Image (cartoon, rainbow, N blue to C red):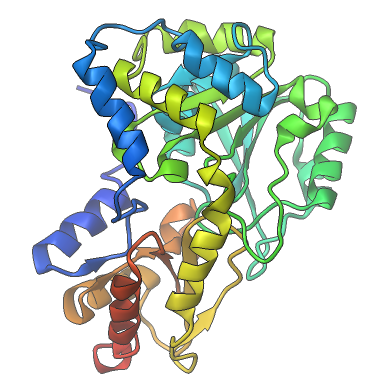
Length: 377
């Protein structure tokens, strides 16, 4: 059989988690919380399982959940909201619906590893633009010069995984300028970490700007917001013409998502504002992690959002960030993700990504192990 993705191997998340499990290391590589979700949410799930919510849901999502999302975001519950199997499926469907063979898709690097395979599977051409290290700013003049007659999609991620960058007002103004100048371009915005921003930074959704909203798939998820990554429940917000095309794809990939979870989430988000406390919750964990980091060993890169913190290894070395990450996992028993894997050309600034979604005592122990890194490298 001829592979459709010959250059794509196993995910770095799968690799590093397997390595962490093998050597019993603290796993700060894969982005999942180690703590329990709100007991009320779990109780709602148990209630709906016991009440027989075991069969297919409507393909676009149960009306109760779409209504709750409509109240939160202002999108039409019938025409503009689709419940998906996590943000991953929402993104895959949006890319599939938008990209045809030969279309160019602007992707900002470092980028989450789902984007490029999804583009390639549609015969699209990823056009990589690097965010400027170490602030990870986007040069919008260069973006505009990179647009060609083949450019079909600009893929946005804010707050940004893996860098923690949050787009600012000037970034959105630049996007609006591009949208007005190039009416054929569609935007796909990954906003999974929308409720996790730090240091008074605010999440600015593309949905808040009429010039962008009418041409944007906004993809998000309940996973990071409510500590339920295993429930795989997400959603896509888009104007009717885009939603119609996305649903054509969605119905033949998963058809619908976990029914009981949809009912539980509908009940929970209709009465809970816990998402509004999430930024302070993770900001405190960031401080626990950074408070005692040995800054002679590691430089601290700004994290304006997400539940990740990046550190740059400061000691001169011929080792790659991937080699550093693997040695720290096997020897210091602390697993991370090397940022070079999020670049097509393997750009290596010796940066490692650490997940903060752990109990404070785990983060404290992780820091103690990191501070012993010089013993192994």
